[in-house]
Image 1 (cartoon, one colour):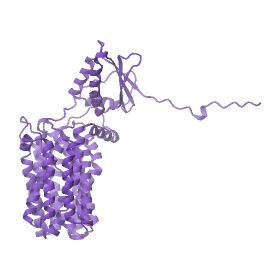
Image 2 (cartoon, rainbow, N blue to C red; image 1 turned 120 degrees about the horizontal axis):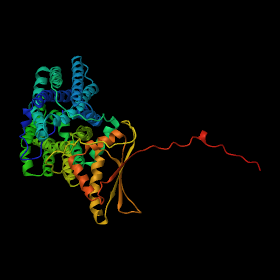
Image 3 (tube, helix red, strand yellow; image 1 turned 90 degrees about the vertical axis):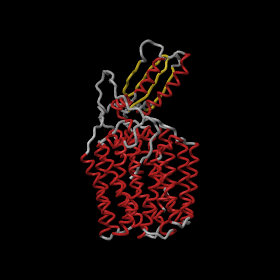
Length: 551
């Protein structure tokens, strides 16, 4: 289960625990903690089971990859699903898949089918259910709580998960040592049923759109385009992917550290995971203080340094106590790093696209984590465990230096919601929702002394229109009458044109008013709507026959 931490330090923002006053959020949040407890127990059980039945270091590292790869493969699609369908139903479907996959894994262990690839397959299916559930749940936070409470609610997702992290791995180790793997997998399956029942029981209001659903292709394209046009989201994706790739070595190789360097068993593994979780809880709890005293970019740098120190200590120590302290430091760095990244994506995304931006972010981040699990597992198998951990430490320092190219910007509030106020213009033709493509032309009359100001505003307008759904945006100047300028863009269908205008915020419309102020005529700029109709080529059968003359 993934978590998002942190919130921008705003003195007027609600207290961290304020969203728990909302009964729907509180019920789902508590049920999620129960499920997270089971998830962590299952993570310990699968990791230690793989270390027991397989002698391959790579297979042990692939346990982490199997848990993160589904989000990389599926998240772009499930994000579009979360923004186009009932998020509550998507959450329920994801939880159902987790229950079914966990039940199959438990049955496999009960029957003695302990093939390493089968275990990885069931782990992949459970993670696929989580990949379906998580974007819809995190996107629903803004539907359940008020806009001002979003940062606090997102912080609670992390605080809850990392609080459970302090006891889940240790509890998993105790259950495995005392009752065996079957008991651990059975308890996990039962914990997955708790949020399933809670989601079925809880309902919340969601602002519905008057427009029909987007096609999956258009929804994915719009989400990718919006993400590509947001510097904040792009920076979070790049830094998160690199951080995940470099830092996952600590968790992916921890079973081997316990087995080969510390000579411990499942209890030692669970205790070390609890140490990591304890550090994460302290990091999450103090996150608000950190943000008031230092910049987000510096926090990311310090987090990378902390995780690098953790990896280096694990590579060099043979003491369980030293390893636990190092993992506590690494846990604090881990949760602090993800704090600015996850919340920045949430706050930089309007409600109409938040499921897609979150899923794209996690797709690439989890892809980096999966790749890192494979990379460091391969290094450990072909060279040594110490070499893999030392390499991870060096890579984390490079991630810290990447802030020169992709700095994390401060953000104090969430992206404004669309105004949803738009009166469709009168048209003379009868159009169907899927009629198109639609071409929009806006003609301006701009005096020469206002050209520079006009071009500056139009650069902003291009960004606004394109991220809301405009395609092929261009600005032309009339060669014969230089004071005439024409803005042109397209939408695939008539419905997409209406949807574009419904997505514009009040700030976007204020920008339009500033552009109109530069228009030299008393009347507003003329808007022309056209529909493309390609001319059919002449068929060969319709061409006149050639005339042959005889000489």
